[in-house]
Length: 308
Image (cartoon, one colour):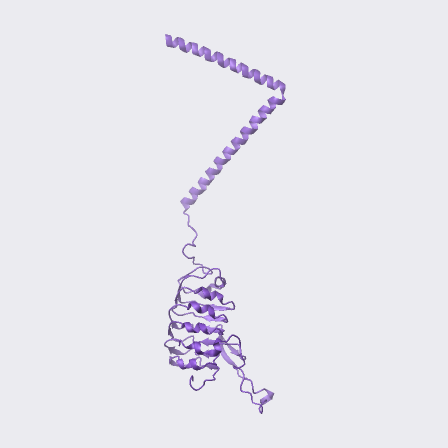
């Protein structure tokens, strides 16, 4: 196909029983916009020459996928339908559902899902910046997700689920603004989901089945993010200490306020009430005299006892 059908734009061979590898000759189909080999028994690796497909590097669409060569002498067919257009629908698995498409001018898709492909995801595939959908799910792919995956800024669908991919999720993945469907579930991915990005606002289902993956939106916290656990005894001790501290502080505050009020209340009364002031100082004098006499008597008695 890659040698003779060089103008091929759509190649859909899904749901057959093809075996063997994906032929590298398909990379010669530079006008190919849709490659669907899903649900077969293909094995070996994903060809690393897919970046030769020029049509998938162009951002936007063209009419090449929906038009036939223009024929001036046959402009109308049955029912007056222009012969320059295809009437047949093409069925594709899109976001998990089998849908019929008519206008494929804007759709650039690679679907190799549900095979037995192995090896790494080739980095060359990240140069196909016009791709709208990339589905490599349900294979035996291993290795890490290419760090350059964020270059595929036209992606609307990315499905890498049910493989054996490991390592961290590349932070560049968050640069794909129009990515509406993402599925990285059932792999061996680890580490923290890149924070501060749209990747944290997605449905947790997109990350399930990766035991070593942590961070929002998953419930599993990453190391250093766990809230410190406080035992019951420690918590009770802390509560008692806080309670004692509060009582002691309140006691001192109350004592200070009481002393100030009593002190100034007493002396302001003496200042503004003359009779009370006289009585107070008279009482002080009487108390002083009584104290002096008492001390003198006890002193004399103590001296007599010592001399005797």
